Image (tube, rainbow, N blue to C red):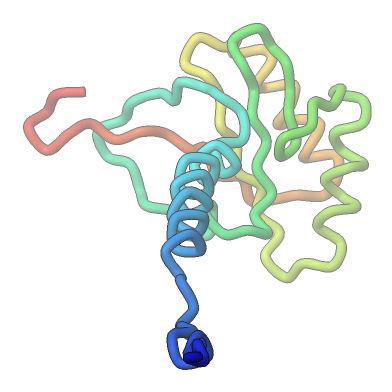
Length: 144
């Protein structure tokens, strides 16, 4: 009579298979790459083109105060729509702790001039003396 000896303990593979984890990480990376530009685009406006625009690096900072005026005369402080009556006090509250008290305006090229002027007047009542108007610059060949 023979005894059958099993030798299964030596065949155990203790390596971890990381392929599923890498697949999940790549999917998450693609999702974040697609979503991130959507988060930075605050309010969709078509900016006016200018030939001699001055670069304003402070406007792209996270703590910059940006007001957008859309073509249908809606006013946005950051991503939130706000009325002109509340705009001055909201800007004043936002700027009271900041050293750089500049407010940047992104006005749609088809927005009514009076709506942009009213928004600037509302910001001026909050004590803001320096305002930047953001525009797009023509390409190097003079084209849009």
